[in-house]
Image 1 (tube, rainbow over the protein chains, first blue to last red):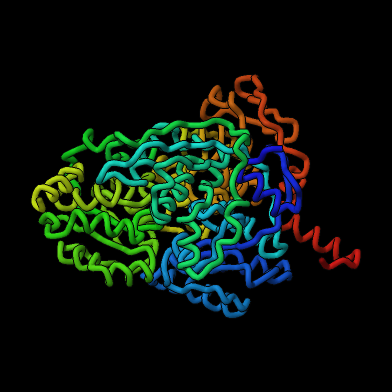
Image 2: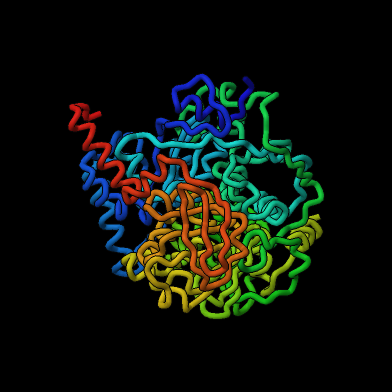
Length: 428
Length: 162
């Protein structure tokens, strides 16, 4: 029977030759990712009550990212508890303040094609960029995983999104996902697996592919898969991991998909999501001139090295507009180091950007950079639900790092391509 | 009663997430209806539209509803992680496409096993997706953890600690 990539991974984890769509199966978990907010503080006491301990400490990765660095006694308390739990349970893969979990996992070589991975965070779909079946679960379900090493899953159908064509200059994976959220809606994935394919995806570096898989969560998908290729293998090797057998983790050519969406990205314009939902996305031209107070470049989906470089491309030699605050929170310490080494950070700070600590920061309203009532922000993050980044009446627009940087320079939302075209003119 | 796309950030606002859950519950849905948390009573049923609970994996989004005494959430569809979280915490979550016929204040009796919702006020009833028996028994046990405790205790009794 022809199988999708999702079916192949689930079958392997369930110890079966094949699995059918709709079947409920029990799978052995290859890796469980926890973070400070949903991890030990919620899991610890329940796990203790069960008395089982952790089934396999080597298969657990724990990251502090949501509450770092502590901004008050409450967040400091959660972090202290997290560190104590890591020591007590001998969690070797403990990354304390090293970056956002979804970026740290691949950076440290923990992901490879074919793995069945759970994460205590909805953006765990990011791991799909590496050909893993990785999905988010709640804390209670994580307790069961830590106690037993297993979880159940209903084998999902796969929705194929075939991305053809070539992205224009100044247009990125974030624009693609915002456009897809508008087109398909936030339950467009219907808790199925979504798989991204096509020449536009193949052409992307891993960090851009991660943006696609990350925001598959915004489509309501359980997983956001991308079949591995040589780009994947190279990234994993450079991260010190072993990519394994890439050929094995491909969907069969005649596999059945729930449906295929054709998405030609050639003429895609930069997109911006209006406040309230990523599905409110539309071409940037329709909101051009909207005045902002804050521009935020951060989060798992919007502050990887590739994202900071996009922003630097726009900001180099320019200045953030008077009265606008541009906050940049790199997604990991390795991102910061690489951006410092290649001059990206310098371009950002010389333009007037404020460098923030690595971590989830203001994205989920937990860290520094919170918005006041009625303030308007444009952000590279993944979600803009009401009140998420601060006061209930604050407004968050979502855009690519190009668009956010360009808007910071002009003081109002604008099309970044104007800046990039100008630059071409200046240079030549 | 709520409309479409009630997200986890309005159910469990991020700025109160690091504090105790009981405190967080006071702010549940405050951004869309400030009267909800103070006004809700034990045994109430929350009715939502499409994609209820979309967004984050934070299970406090379901937990706060339980703390506020909500007996069941009925919606046209659910965000996948929220749905699993609700059931795992012993909160009944039922998919019911016809639920938009309900009006605020209607008295509802939810029978998740039979897949039926009775509207006593309007003297009507709606078909919904029944929950499979293994999930019903988990909810009746109080959620996944009490269910797992029982299972582990039974295994221990049978001399099989694995």
